[in-house]
Image (cartoon, rainbow, N blue to C red; front, side):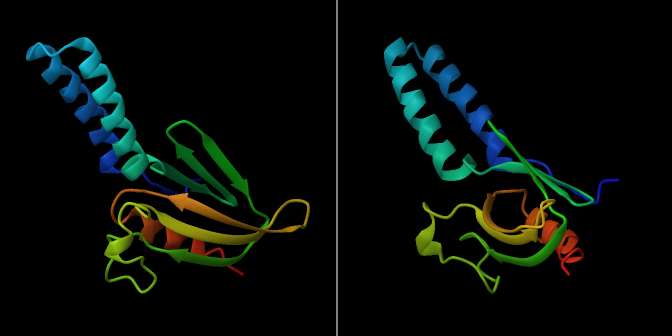
Length: 149
């Protein structure tokens, strides 16, 4: 039974569309191959680090939180969720716990601070960096806050 599932943010899709467009533009305009290659890597890397590094799909099933990033997958099995806190990204100006717009290149993701008891009855605190679709973070927090005891 899935309680919550989100998709990747729009910036993740734009990363690949923009990269393909960048390469096609260079090829169609007959730019040198090395120029296309190195400038493409620089642009791809900058965009990825700034907007897509923490882009993920989130799935919550029972007492399992699964974050599916581009290159890694992280699973958290919690026995009892105790404390749930967060900090919002620069784009959530109206949120009470948001970073300011001055932090734009640094914080293009949301922080979720989770304190939970694992299967071994040990208390664990973790900070998770999450970048989901707009509105996905609030829905995820509602689904998780229902489990806080």
